[in-house]
Length: 141
Image (cartoon, rainbow, N blue to C red; front, side):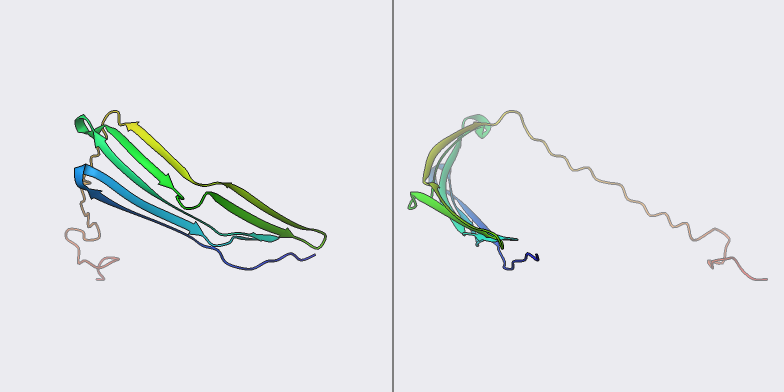
């Protein structure tokens, strides 16, 4: 029994962020995938999108509050798949809630200090010997 399948699949993701008045950061994002292909089947494509609005507060902007929403116009997401072989065939279709809203609160502890150490470089040219004629193997006499 020789099993094979062919096809292609790909993913894409994009995010854009803009600082707007009152030091608010507005982010729009989205992505998706083409249908996947497996050895004995295939599945459906999917996509998602969302918006995020955030602002940092207090000393050194340690407190961050974000409001987010995703898949605003899509109450449910459906995913289907199909699997087959010489002796069987199977289909499935699943749906799940995809619309999401929320608030995120985070606090940044400590500091992240990055330092770049410079490496000292030196070139040692040891192929030139003092008193030699700069030829490999010495001179012929």
